[in-house]
Image 1 (cartoon, one colour):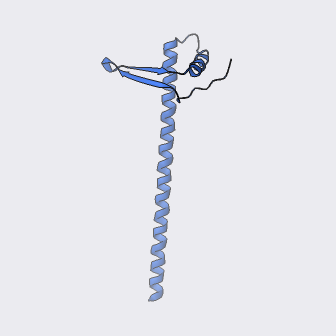
Image 2 (tube, rainbow, N blue to C red):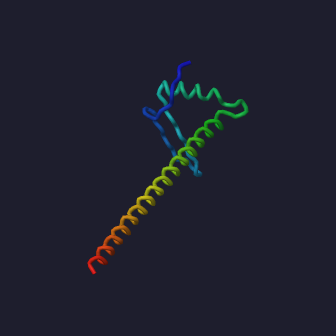
Image 3 (tube, rainbow, N blue to C red):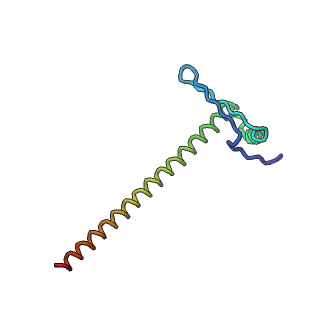
Length: 106
């Protein structure tokens, strides 16, 4: 059994909105990606039907992506806050320097 990793490079995803708020997602894999997915699906627990297993894979991926995006947003907010604090400190130092210079002139 060859080791094949799944990638989205050649994958085509089609979303179709259905009635009553339903959606159909169709994913077309290349031959190698299809083989890799079939091999991955061999780990499906026997008590879980295929459809439920596919849904669980999909939602686990969505949840992982949401967590990654949230972590990136938090990191970005922290970086912006650190940059703002640094800018504020620089502004305070400039004001202190100006006040010290004015006091020396008096």
